[in-house]
Image (cartoon, rainbow, N blue to C red; front, side, top):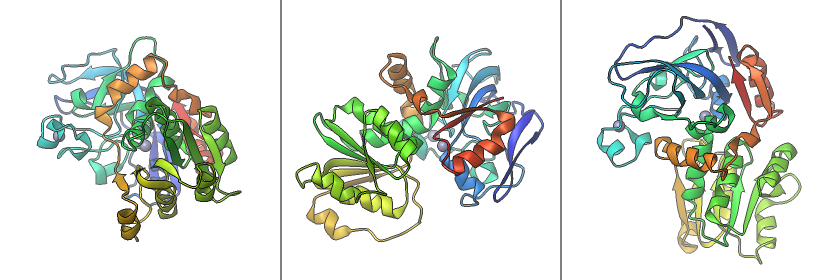
Length: 345
Ligand SMILES: [Zn+2]
Ligand SMILES: [Zn+2]
């Protein structure tokens, strides 16, 4: 089969690799109908995430079930499915508490042998282990483009918005208008805020944020914290959702909120450790939440929201390309010339 593989820092290639097969009774073999390129793929491309040479990339995908192991109860051949970007067992103590991303037996698709040695979704086929706990059925009538993001970026945007504790009438600041920031902008509206400011420096992304109901703030032209304070009577936002991970962006998310406010951080931190404003957090009685998305808990409700027309995540797709063009897709996405790219085999 054709698959996009990691060949070394800065080098990915579409090549022929053996078609994967089911090896364990909990697994499902999926014929991929669409994959997407994610910011995490760029971390791998640039060598910031460890990856072994030859491993297949891609952790955002939808497809059709081709075969299932004997233990798989929720899916059968020909079912259309979307997978979380990681697997969970569903039965360990933390899965039973609903924290699937803290599962003792989790692995991540398309991240090579350092993260469980699973295949990837930027390929014609992928095997999903622990299929019953890692996938959801796509509702009838829903397109691949509508469904694909519930397995990663839409769930992450929702997770960020939910943990920002937005109340009706609130002012929210979304820091970063990349794919996750745009999803957070969209999801924040579900909680009834009066205004959602969106901070970024890329015009095309800010235009998209405007289209999704956000109020763009271009950090190249104005100081984002001052701009938010100026538009809130000097108070600041009630909550912020940090979707970049750069320490400077986290600082912006903290500086943007009023006393008693909440900062919800979902961006992948750019450093392991750094300064944290303990005194400010204490003086202003701020709540700081951080974390990567507990996807499995959100896939079903998000699919229902999309089916009901309350969310349209496919709006952020800027490029539709073939799997064989994946190398060019990475180049475009890395150069910020594309907001979100989907690939079809
Ligand atoms: Zn991702
Ligand atoms: Zn578990």
